[in-house]
Length: 308
Image: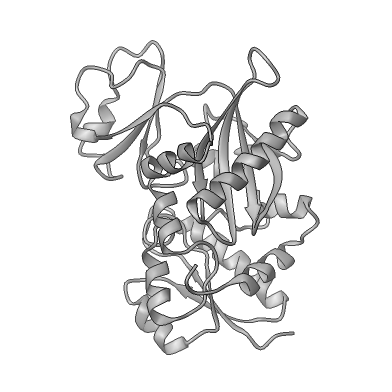
């Protein structure tokens, strides 16, 4: 048992609010099972005042998306001097910006796809790079706003410049990598197992594939060559350290094995606030390494600090 009071921050007001509520409630229940005194905080614009009144010993950050994993809430927690989980201000902001994260990863020797950051209104009738390519919002998660431009598509996707677009004006245009979806978590300074994510009915690992029941199948350990498996772990840890991440993170990769089992492995991005339901990827990786969900969230709470 412990007398620590943990405020679990969840919900918020990003596109990923439903995912965050799911993560937060799962973590809160697990922490209660570990003996912590837990307060669930559905984060709104008055979160600083709420936390000032609560004065928890630790803030467990279960927020996803803008304001929750981009350094914003981390800055508030630093100002309030409340120890918190996951990465700090700089690493969170850096990892959330896909363009800047690629620069840092590449400089650290992590292989990335050819990409450019553009204003969405600069899209014309001419492709910004030779198809196939992928367009992503620079600062969104859960595959919101991702558009795949096929090889035979005659013009850029019109949705990018439409009034329906709600994911910001800066987008990342990235060479499409054929192949399999691999992901690897990091816990502290240790790379966890490598999972292959196999969408069951979707063209790629989009929001429904991530969160809808039966939307994807997780294969851990991934059925790949030992060389690629170890390379995934090495690169995930290298990206985690290059960004300055703390606690847990998860790096996503594409692996093109069409011509060789040791084919092209490309790092896509790092997630500093990975999903935290018991069936989410990082908890599954931790379980594969012998850590129960309760043990994982306990480790995260005990790892919490300021100045991360």
